[in-house]
Amino acid sequence: MNCDKKDLLLYAITDRHWLEEESLYEVVKESLDGGVTFLQLREKNLSDEIFLEEAKVIKELCDEYSVPLIINDNVDIALAMNADGVHVGQSDMEAGDVRAKLGPDKIIGVSAKTVEQAVLAEKRGADYLGVGAVFQTGTKEDATEISHETLKAICETVSIPVVAIGGITHDNIKELAGSGISGVAVISAIYAEKDIARAARELKEETLKIVNK
Image 1 (cartoon, rainbow, N blue to C red):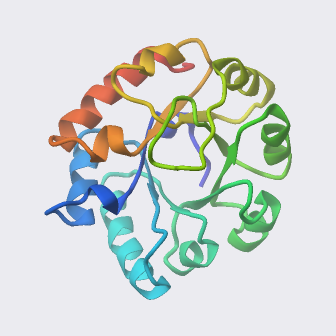
Image 2: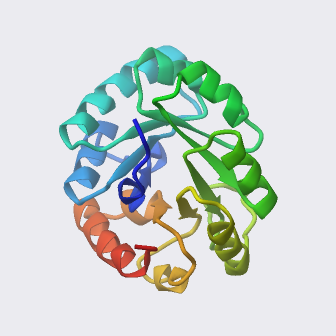
């Protein structure tokens, strides 16, 4: 499965911190109804057994919407439930090793903060890059901001799609215009909102105005 850059337009990352009364399935469905084009299932605190069961159910849901589902970090879970791919950070398994485990047809995303990291990730077989934090974010406490100049330089240097991540909201997304990104990755801008479908729909409209067509 190749990574089509239009699939990366509105990239949602799950976070059960925002669930409140609803199940993860329900909030993901609402976000897909709103137009999310790519989903990353991110679970840091679940056992592998529970994570695997959850991932299988979310995969069926994503398949109904023809939206790729990738797993954060956990290559074994991705393999076990036949996810569309995996996203890894700089401190996780290196892209070439992930490719060796997953095979040629899966999507591999890699986090990058510098041009050097971006170039290396592409060389090792990454299909897209997640670059950030482009704004201050409360979701990842260890996330340091990168300048918009760096974001633009990465987009200009690599030939694979780049997704901006970190602190992106409906209000500040316009600042990313002209950077060369193919999409935005968000957590709270969708899942912390009362009306998740509407938040996704409005964010998608804003993203369409600023992406690298």
